[in-house]
Amino acid sequence: MNIALGSDHGGFEMKEEISSLLADLEHRVADVGCFSKDSVDYPEIARQVCEHVRQGSSQFGILICGTGIGMSIAANRYRDIRATLCHDAYTARMSREHNNANVLCLGGRVLGIEVALDIVRVWLDTAFAGGRHQRRLDMIS
Image (tube, rainbow, N blue to C red; front, top):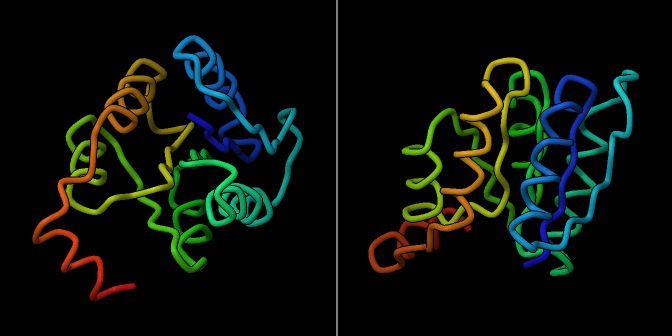
């Protein structure tokens, strides 16, 4: 699977760990940055990841900033993007199963790395349930 990955400086270290996990799971990663701990503007990173997803070159996107809040707000500005901020495996599973989320947002300064890696695994392994959930998604599309 193709996954677009991006972070600001607050999520840089977590992005590197997640990139390694995705490679281990044999996913293709489009890393749009950032590429150091130097300060960057998160809306630009969110735009690039969302464009990958919107254009279909990546099935999913993962965005990381300090709290995940800024990336979530920025990503949800784009049509056809359903970005979700997750803090545990349960919210990750429900965001895919019920909301068909296509961009995962994480907080690099609020999550431990093992929790974040677990969230990514669960999020990628969970399918959309469809049914009544599709009807609800149609209402917001």
